[in-house]
Image (cartoon, rainbow, N blue to C red; front, side, top):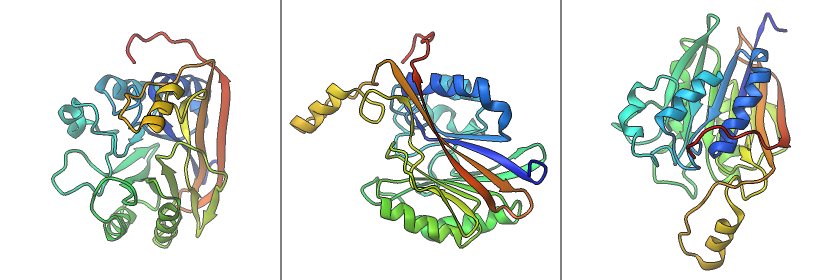
Length: 272
């Protein structure tokens, strides 16, 4: 299988310093097992957005492609570097003229891999309709490579499932849902496409989807915009999905959820 397939690892949303370090340590041990690594990084810098430093750190950790979502713009500096960030995607269906790219074709060991980042529209920001836009993008990538990966950053489960089935009709290799930070137990292969409704998140386990419990509770109790803080605690988790894809056909051969929970890692950075 190894000669005819490519093994891809996708990390669910990385949340703050605990998530960054958890992914770093996981890749130190396991990076050699994978041909290509993708991670959703929109919550990587103190839970909101992505600094240029963290972007560069992820490259040194061995992450080949970074996807994002509605929080990618939360750090103002993103506008200064996103056009030159060749490993980073923002959602494809932001209006024409938005900085950054929503789709890129990467290459590893002579194999080209198309990656598309898309934002859902149910309970989310107002963005362009993704349906025909993504169909056209898939067809464009298919002229170059049979391997197409989608990160669909969306809130509603029904929208994720319906859009996944739609994309599977056009020969997508793998479809990962992100945004809700809770890993779902529905990994499957649809029409040759690996699928999961949500890949989960990487970060502090003892909180509320990576954020501090007390501040999260106050927002629910009062309805006031309490500032979120990153959760702390003795445990961190890694949520990821592993997929084997046939190099020639682009079809998924198998899909596997990864859920690792372990004692907190050392913190040797000063920033959040």
